[in-house]
Length: 388
Image (tube, rainbow, N blue to C red; front, side, top):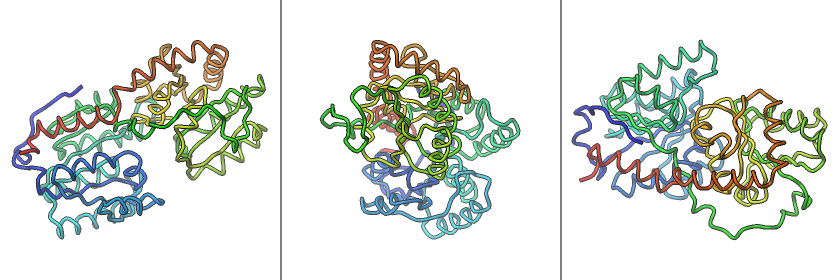
């Protein structure tokens, strides 16, 4: 799971006890949804942590309420943005004032800003890449730009952590001092320790004989909701027993509702928005449907696997790590409506296959649970001498 290279001398005397860490992430949502347990671990090890991110919703104040020291900074997800340059100036000021010992950064923008600050002040940097902005199938010019940027910035990275095979293989060509691969950011199984829900929620107005297809993700272009709605529309024209539930929020939410109406499937599609009961909704679903254009390692797919759902996912990095084709589901090209339709039909017509795929997924995802990832990270910390 872990591959190691030589680590520079700048890390040798660092210990978490009494260490000051500047933790940089693009959004508060990312911290709230995925990184909270790992920040708590850093605090438990004796470090103090200042979290810098943009405020995009209720998550920022909620993080403050649980005791995190939050610092608001407007960062954009796309690294090449003038707003991020102003953010870099703010981070330099923050470093001069607080004299952090370690920068711990996440995502492309956080990774870029954090490593520029680390380079300027000669501070060690840990960077977790949740998914490089270059990937197979992307625009070649964009891939060249983002690959070149990551390759250059890797020279100023003491520990580079990736979480899927495609990114890990790419990172091996970079000159980061140490490189690792971990099993994602960790599926927190404790979130789902509730009584099994057998009844359909009344608010959804579903029938017992409905076959439910579920998608859970943010409503942004790369999640490819337009293609998924087209696929479902083709499916709905062939059978009356299907319903499509979509959970999530984002800038394309209203646009996709209009698009569903244009496809004349508004009576078979439920746009539920942001939900805190995803586990219950997954319990009543039959198939998980996810056709994004690129991913790091998709948490919503891991959640679906935990709830023993078969998955029809796009054949992109991360998804290929999680879903064994013909064992846990089917992988299709993101824009191939016909292939997606065929995969959904096969699963809808074969209950035994759905159950078998779901069981296989439930077993496989255990390797990606939060406790496993925490142990992987702790092993990385131990190997780098962060503990007394």
